[in-house]
Amino acid sequence: MNSVAKRAVILLTRPSAALRSVNWELQQWRAIRVKVRNNNLEQALTLLQRKMQSSGIERLIKNEQTHHIKNSEKRVLAKKNLERKIRGQDLARKLKAILVKKVRGL
Image (tube, rainbow, N blue to C red; front, side, top):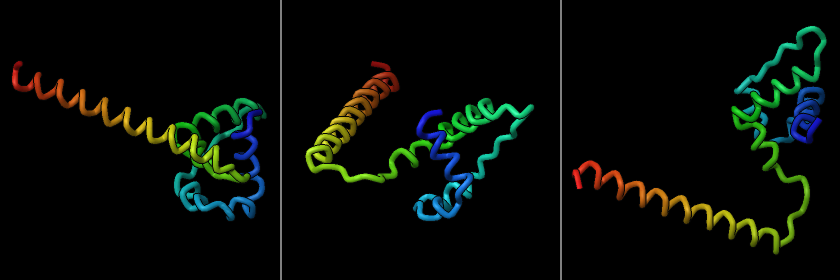
């Protein structure tokens, strides 16, 4: 069982620990439920993980920091985020130019 599934099990079995989470209200609102059929817990956990991925809860759990991040790591993450943002803006600009040409018939 991977770490996300373990955290999900902890969230489900110990709600008091989950109350500390900032995103607890969001998780309550999404109300992800999985039925365990034929006492097959592994299949239910797999289904739960898929539902968590599609709803974005897995990302929220991963982003929740439980340890200290060094300043050098923060700089690296900030640089990666900036590069990702710039790349997205460049792609959006190129796509806009292509669509403008297509609409104008050039």
